[in-house]
Image 1: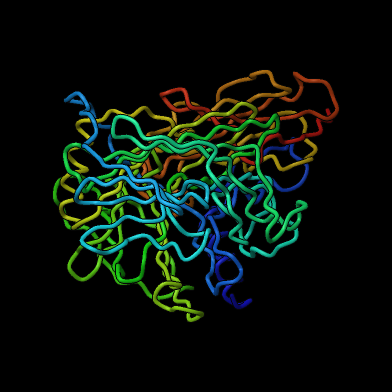
Image 2 (image 1 turned 90 degrees about the horizontal axis):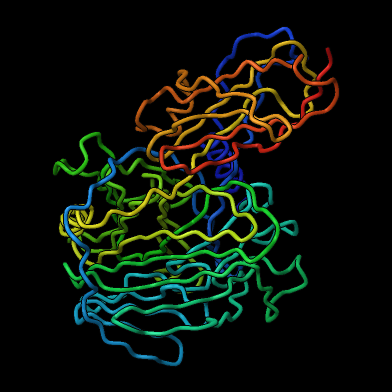
Length: 482
């Protein structure tokens, strides 16, 4: 990618991901400025290998809320499926749709066949439909050749190195695949082309057809971190999808009347550097052709926002190398022994029929709220010298609403912040959330209750389901001097 394109993309993501802090009350106890640029994790997607002319999809989400459905019926068993095991891929077939899972690239979905067409772009090991993980404190960025590229488990790597599943099985019409993911950039970790580097992260995938419609696919992911280290809060890709170019129109509903039949947005995308992050208040999006047929993704457990972009790549087979990307947004940290599950639903067909089915499914399934909160401590800044009473302020959001924000000093809870202050800047970058624009918080910390010297400050936000996150930048060191 050209340097100008890279600069444009990075600027776009920085602006979208890091709102300018709102003013907080001036406090005499703070030495220096009372506001600081928030340190928000830049989200980095699964990337395409450097042998292609592809660029990297947009990274930073904006969220919006969809009401939590109440289950009204017992979920049905999966639709009947036929299993075949071939040299490169294993397949399950509903008789209407055929799903292929790659045996060389970490068990990722490489094909979804419908009406004689494959919807999934599998030009290289950086495409497909799968999971990609990140560390908010680890450098990834947008240049796959970066020698400082950090922790980034993916189904394959930038060299398309082979990554065979650990196990796979087909039982009761469900395909289960388990794979240890690879570092996306092995070059700075002792590997390279033909020498992959395994990570400490295992991803399991369960794939089945939905009984209500054999064109619909339920995909459940489980991420298990076997390491003893901690990877900071970041945007994670829990179900990204690369789509083939015949399906060139992006469709989603971003309005404030979800599931009422209101018209969605349907747009034909311009090539990169044009890109988008859209609220998806029904939590689905897709790419379709002129007949409204394509692939839709419904992610009821994610933040209700999708990122999307079109890459027009002239190198090689232009039609197959060019690709469309979309992905729902998810935020969480990954610690020792971490295990996390999330489900998405895919639909091959008309977007109108997909929308109707998703509306039905949201009444059948009652998936738990597993998505943690996300946000930032704006002040005090790292290594700030403080005295007397100092304001601790920032912002926090959640896919279903923040319940409380708590402040800790040296690991001990010192109080609960006032939450619900206006933050128009956050609302612009994360539109549509319930309670907008009141995402700000503030807590007046009495430093005279603590000894002079260096102390570690932390702020944690929780939702009603008990999901809790340490807000960025994590541990904030302050120097108390009274």
